[in-house]
Length: 119
Image (cartoon, rainbow, N blue to C red; front, side, top):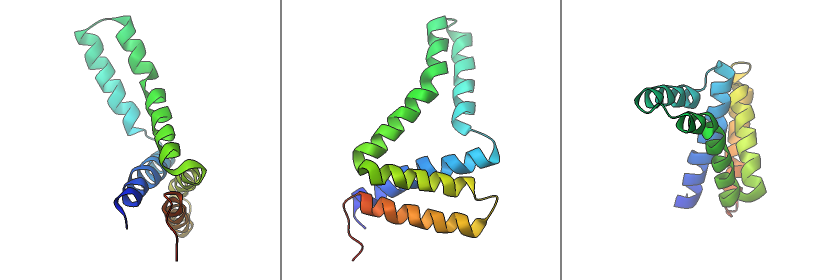
């Protein structure tokens, strides 16, 4: 598997899609927890309201950058692979086999999104 394809599948399909869906299914968001902790510590060290506002909008900025990166590297099929992987992560607690089937489909779509062929 070429480096670009492997990076796309790990970073966007599994990282952005599947793990985000899994965290949503479990009911926690590690990114939000880390940013809240950093915002609290930074707010105590530098009590500037502008800095606190930055930590409020930072998760949205990071999400938009991640989606933009997925689109830039994989176009529409790449975004589809991320969405399928997200649904796979959401369905892990409901049906493991369905989730794994969806994850495999997302990986195949992510593979094709980087300009590769199956055969």
